[in-house]
Every structure is written in structure tokens, then in C-alpha cells.
Image 1: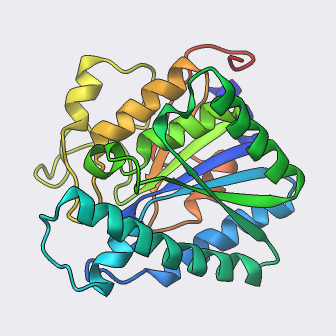
Image 2 (image 1 turned 90 degrees about the horizontal axis):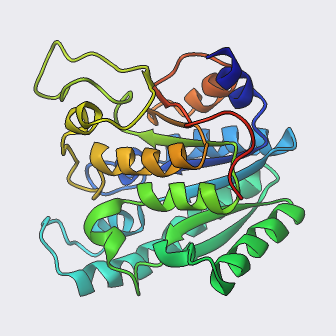
Length: 272
């Protein structure tokens, strides 16, 4: 455990994923307070010389209220159109806040099949490397206008793990609306206990993940466990923490026990 804490504290390339339910309020408006705090934390990490990537959901959620679509059930084409509308607004807000902290944000839209082992994968990897060289903070989202998988299932949890693998990240942090993985659904069980460390994705862990999700996002603990599986296999530690307090990112990097840590499979250098 000491070794993994040391790895986390010395992480140089960090991917942070924030979900819809963290940055979009229940009424569909953006939670500017949380977004500002998170950007401040990420900007300070960049000032320390670290490579930082933000994977952000929320484009569809941001556009729904603006277009007056309050019903939960809308079609895939409608969601894709909302993604196009909301992404512009999302990037405007992020770019404005990052600029206030002296940072340059960039937009990267990907699909999950980018890890094809071929030219597209290498092109994406080269893009991130060059953005790091330019001291930019890439903001990643799935290209929902051409990809329906994330719209239906993922809320970018899987995508964030794929990005972590792509850039050979030292750490992936998933900011969610829950403190971490519990042994049972805390919404329905008052005696639910937080699991601080997970050493492998067993059937018990999958069962503990359940299928809880919120109305705005499409993700849930199941998709976070799927992301953890990808990271574990590639020797990348992953942490689920509560995004309502973005300073949890700092606490993680200072070695505090925050949320749920998914331990990588083995010591040493990451694959690739």
C-alpha cells in the first residue's frame, strides 16, 4: 500500500473525469461553483508541471434545459443534437474559467474505438503529446454526434479509462456524485459501508456496484467498475471520489485515503 501511495503522490500524468451529475444541477443549469473549483485545482496541478487531462461529460445535460426538454425519454437523434448544442456551451465555460487561471484549454473529441492499435491510435496519442508540449489542458468528450454508445451506456467512464491507457497516465480519478464504491447501494441501505481499497474486480465487486444511476447522466457504478477493470489490467491506479468537493483531487495526491482506490495488477512500468 505504501508503494501505491508513493506512485499516486508522484503522478506526473493525471486524467480526471467529471460526470454530468457533478457539473449539471438537477434543474439542468451548470454548477459553476464546482466547475470553478475543479478548474482551479487542475490549473494548480498544471502549474506544478504535471500533465493534466479533463474528461468531462455534461454536454447533453447542459443543452436539455436550454432547449426546454425536461422529459427523461428522448430519442438518440435528439440526444446527438443536444450533444452538439451543449458541447459548445460547455467548452465556452471551461475555456473562460481556465483562462482566468492562466491556462489554455483544448478540445479533443474521441470515440471509444480509438484504441485500434493502428494509425488512429497513434494520431490521437501524438495529439495529446503535442498538446502537453504546448502546455495545454485537453478537455475530452466522446463525439456523441457520430457515436451512440456513450449516449446509451457510459457517461464517459469507459472513455476516461481509454484515454488513461492512451497517454500512459499515472492515475485516473473519477469524480462522481458518490463517495466511492459501497458494499451495497447506500441510497437504499443505511448500513452500507464504503470500500476503501479494491484489489481485483471480483463478482462480489460487480454485485456491489449494482446499477444505480441518476436522471441526468447515463453512467453508474457499473460503468465505473468497467473503467477500473481497464485500468487494473494496464497497471494504472484508479480512484472514485466525490466530485462535490473538487479539493478531493488534492487530497488524493497528498496520500490521503479518499474514496475507493482500485489497485493496479502489478508493480513496475505500465504496458506499452
